[in-house]
Length: 351
Image 1: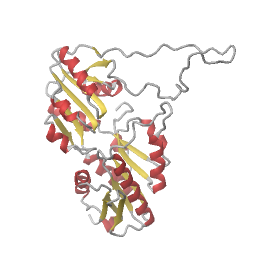
Image 2: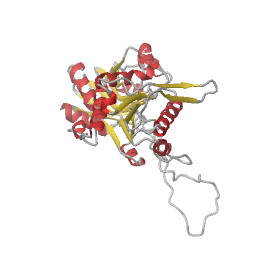
Image 3: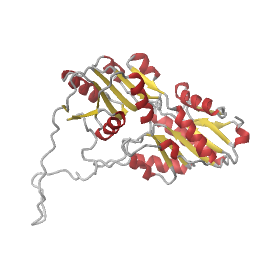
Image 4: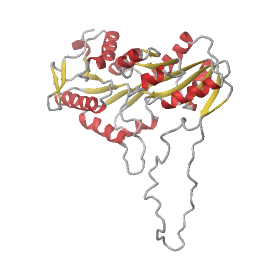
């Protein structure tokens, strides 16, 4: 495909080879070549971006996969977007399969909503549109002042279950709404894991626990607020029969795997035959590969929104599903001004 004739370019904002793999897959499907640019870190740690070809009046798609060094990847994206903006690109669309800081989208104590800050920074840098996948909270779309297409990986993960998981009978999840959607589409039974591993970020997420309670504090006469009983999370338990069945735990992000490992142990004790963990974004930080390899989990299935080749070498249980097809089709449709509805056919808010 002649990029000069079609009026668009695809760039990769990553400075590491491992992170450009997805960009290469996408451009191969589009029949295009990656735009000529140089992204590197100077000796003092500053990020430098140089655009090596004209982009005036064109639609520019910046593919940015997020490695472990999140902050460097964010700066690469911001600087490249700003460089393209000053080079008179017509539209600058960020293709960010895993949106960083998406877990910091709610107020906690005296913290901040970092995800909203990042959305404002991207708009200021010059982005006019974003393509992402399975945002941690769908409400994050409201943080942006420009369009956001939040694609879904569920069709690819469901296809993997149908083709690779034989005699599947049961779907179980740390994320009940998502598990219910999978169970309904695959005509399976449903069970729920309940306990400490179910939710770890809902505590104090509205910031109303400040200031802390102080003994003998002086209150206004007549102002006595009712005391709330402190939360106490119950131990992990399984609601439903999993004996002799294949258990599939579904979530959007798998990073620290302690909760998944603990859930797998309970499922094994309850008689589960095999245990699969499926997630869109396989961040798999720190000791995650080792913990998975030593656990009762049989397979961890993730997409290639985040590079994890090193983790796969450490843990053969990790499998990858390619989602470059839907990203390349989204790029093509946006550039041609076509409807995106086809990419969301039969998709519900629970997927």
